[in-house]
Length: 171
Image (cartoon, rainbow, N blue to C red; front, side, top):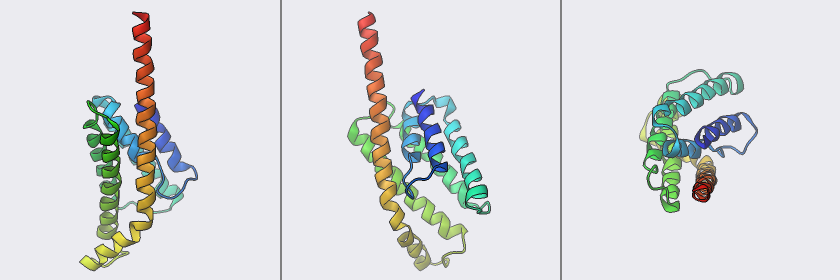
């Protein structure tokens, strides 16, 4: 149940004022991959993709572009990475996955902007400029993924610990 709640919170935060690139999206995807239903892994991807469409059309007034498919693919990839935490979600593994989430988003999103937008020349120099331009956002991405992953996996551990304790007392 927490996995669904964290995804809903991640979607909602995107519509609220927040520091740029500081959202629980990556952490919610990791948590859902680790703790959510395997049969319903598509739900967070669909919710986040729908929120992308709404934000781009009504908030940012961006046209639909092919780079949105890169982002949707990234959502699915992070859920799969979260699946690697299903049996072992020790703090260092969660931190590593969180860092991989931030780095992969930085690499994928800046590449997609370079490839599908007309902001940068289609040269190696243009690609490098795209990555350099993304650096100010990268710090918040790393911080948010680490922070929200710690919070979400910490809450999950507390809740499952209480459930285990309650079951042990009842027995």
